[in-house]
Image 1: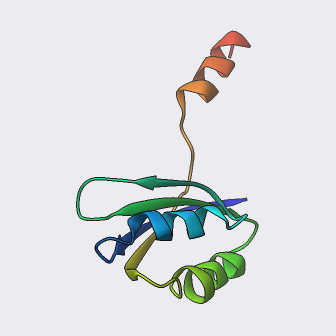
Image 2 (image 1 turned 60 degrees about the vertical axis):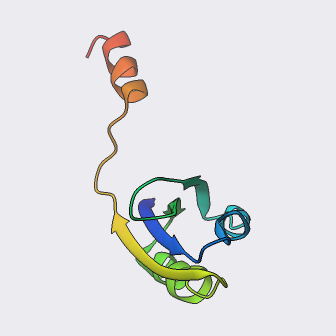
Length: 91
């Protein structure tokens, strides 16, 4: 499973509309409105690179109101939940 973080710049006044459309996609597990240089961040989970390429270029980029996207591919996941499970098993 591949995880990617897609950061989006959205036209003024379209953040809610774009976020709702992103949330409808089954490949997008979470969408956040954020502060800073981007307006939205979408967490994408797909099985292969081709699916990610298709989602970003054929679906996300075509949503009206999106001005720009930047995609980062996650290599590893580190979470407090995972670490707590390891310690509870005695690892």
